[in-house]
Structure formats: C-alpha cells, structure tokens
Amino acid sequence: MIDPSTLDFDKAGGLIPAVVQDAATLQVLILAWMDRAALDETIASGEATFFSRSRGGRWRKGETSGDRLQVVSIIPDCDADALVLKVRPVGNACHLNRVSCFGEEDAPGLGRLARLESTIAERASADPAGSWTARLLADGTKRVAQKVGEEGVETALAGVAGTDEELASEAADLIYHLLVLLHARGLGLATVLAVLDQRSRRLPAA
Image 1 (tube, one colour):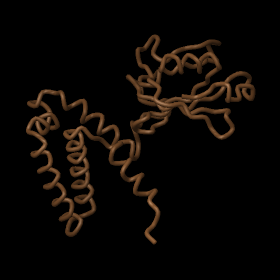
Image 2 (cartoon, one colour):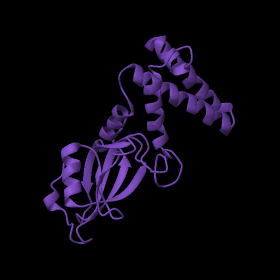
Image 3 (cartoon, helix red, strand yellow):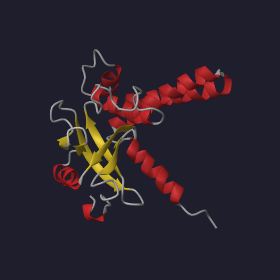
Image 4 (cartoon, one colour):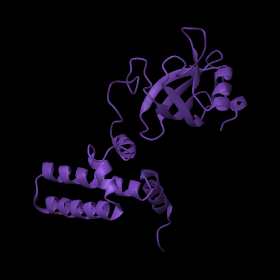
C-alpha cells in the first residue's frame, strides 16, 4: 500500500497529517495525525488508526463508537510529509455523529451520485411493498431498462420545450433510473467512469 520509510515524520515532530476522504463520494471526512506506529497499525489492520495529540497516544477510529474507517488506499503528497487516506466509512466519521467533521452537508456536488448509488444498493434488499427501488428491481432488468427509455424521452422533451426546472427534474429521474439499471446488471458508476477515462486518454485521430 505504502512504504512508511519513505515518509518525512520529522518535519512535524514525529507526526504526519492525514486527510481522510470517502473513497466513493470523495468527501473530506477528517483531518487527523499519524505517527509511524499508527501508520503501521493502519496498514496491518486495514482500518484507520491515528495519533491523538490531546490524548497523547494512538487511537483506532471506532474503538468506542463502532464507526470505523476501512482503508482503501494511502497516498503521500509530493513532499512525502502528508497523506490522503481513501476509506469506506462504516457509520459516521465525526464524533458529533455527522458524516464529516467539515460541516453537516452530506456528499456535496458529484459525490451525491455515489451516495445515491449506495442508497440504491441498500434499498435493493428492502421490501418491494415499501420501496420503489426494490419494487423496480423485483420487476426485472427489462422493466428497469424500459423506465430508462421513458425517462430519456421525457428528458429530451423537457430539453426542447420545458423550463429549466422541468429539465433538471427529468434529468434527475433519468440519472436515478440509469443507476438502478446499472445495479440490476451488476455494474456501477466506477465501470462507467473507467470507460470515460479510457476515452479521455485516446490519442486524437491523425
């Protein structure tokens, strides 16, 4: 994952700042500190462990609250004196029982799509009688695909003759149903983004 010996812990007196980011939404969750022992434990356990300056010692996130941070990757900055930890949160990251320590907003901007994708995955196992998402998935992929087609037409019509508010509303419906279709096929946003990334890297035609 990362070689701790390549990092500069001396610059901040044996500590290194760690920005913790949700791997799916890219929302910044916490700014914490690590010493070498905390980083070693994080790598060994796969769960974020920090050094508390107020307590004067190591603490693993979730030891008392149960809200853990499962580490996906650890990336150093160009000077090797700061880290970004991308994590999968289990529960809330903030001790005030909020998603993030930086305000109350949940997954702002494009991160909202990843949060919606996560919600769809959770609702998939719900009772179809109480969840439109579960009912739609229970009806099968063909029905979900049909809804994507219907919403696509409605979005196009709103784009031609509707108000800005109508277009935004129809586009939201289209995006939701498209994410449900991807889920029904065992795919997700990451698959689509990978295709877009590949396309962006293609050399222009001669």
